[in-house]
Image 1 (tube, rainbow, N blue to C red):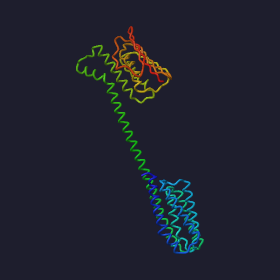
Image 2: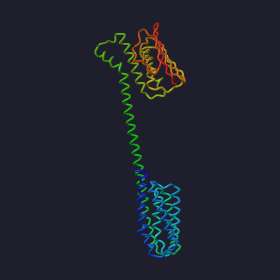
Image 3: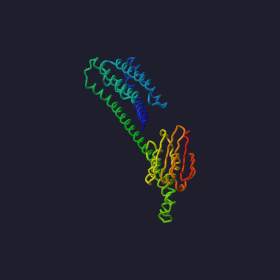
Image 4: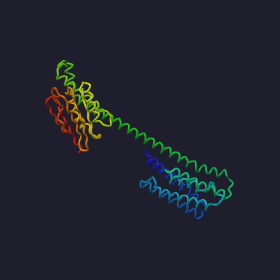
Length: 356
């Protein structure tokens, strides 16, 4: 239940209570005795307030606008002044004081969702009634106390219950929002895990057959082609692990990871970087790094890797010693332009991606 639902339900219940008090309890006592014209005027103003609130609730606007609430509150307090000053002095805060309890219920009806103004208005109404009682020289303090207690205890109880319901509604809403957020995080984590698993499965496609051939002794590490495949697989795996790291510059991080694998094999690699970091999608990074990884896998002595980034283009180039042939690629790039050539023992490869 939302705060609006709490206010709507409470105001609807108060409409029933106020209508019953005004018609069943108050009206017969007014008609049974002679009343001053101002008392009937106060009763008419209260009836108009009741009709206004009922029309708002019927129209689906149970939460009153501040201007409407302020106007109705002023009308109720004016009715309190008229009714209190119109009654005989000896009836103030007695069983015959019809306005004291009724005005309190009206203030509750108008200001139920605004506790601070409600308390202030009830205090003003109580002060007016107590002041008129003292002005009239009232001496029956016990009766006045009973009237005040009976008139305000239920109203204060409604205020407390409403505040508790609103607090519970807010807590329930926060709990529901936290539950939804947790479900969303769980779903995102699950989706990320699936994406990572799919990515690993796709990238390991060339590695698993090699491992199977080595396990079945179909190929041996003494074969140059096998060693080339192993070198390529090592670079691929290292790049794949680096791809999922949370770093400020993912492209440079993946290049550095591939360079590290080549250096562990004894290749002397120099890395030159130019330009500031540019956001590059994962698939594009993969296609930019793959040609360089193939060249480093085949490199036998020295290699030079360069990364150039401009506002319109990202370029990854490599020049390396290539005593043998390059390992087979994983397919034709779709997002970048790749140029590779092998000549006189050197491999030159360049991958370009236009950002615009």
